[in-house]
Length: 226
Ligand code: ADE
Image 1 (tube, rainbow, N blue to C red):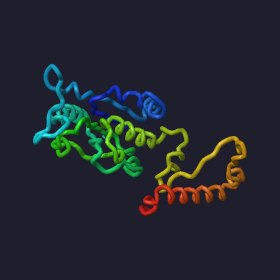
Image 2: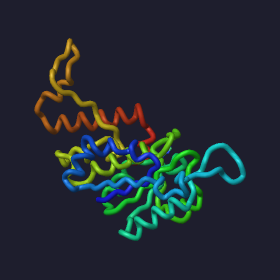
Image 3: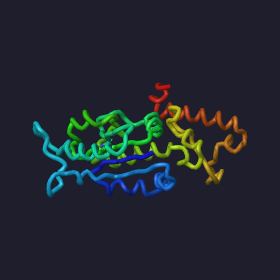
């Protein structure tokens, strides 16, 4: 999978791809990530990319021309399955969306800044808009990193243990059950007996019950979606 990201703050976005799972995915040639600095497509000596909004109001808006130039250049080189805009005023990212995106070949992500982008960019170029939650970040860069992490880890071969992505929270609309490791007794706090029993069937049943219990307590809305 190839991911291109258009950003005003490329430095903010470098580190997530230079560490941990995403670094390994890139090293194994399972994912390629390319950052494009929107400033390079700006106007004049100051490489202007934003301006005041028509109608008045606080905050600058990213202009259509630099973004259009950058997107057109990228689209002339390859076909993108999705052109995604990261913005808080969009449907929230969830596991099914990450699953679907992990099957794509080329994805282009536009990150917003300030007051956002000129609406005509969204109307003309964007095929999918994604928020990572009901709060406002300073820019879409960290949101794009979250999206890339959620998607790249699902590409076959990226995670060492193939089953581990399938048993994540949300894959079946349930939160994960509690997990434990050594020691089995820490200052009197004991690991549930069933996990030490070696009875796989009983362990699976216990995990499922705990997953349902946890989901009922913390995210009952997920159970309504089943
Ligand atoms: N940009 C600013 N806030 C955001 C959010 N919550 N999700 C996605 N992009 C954003």
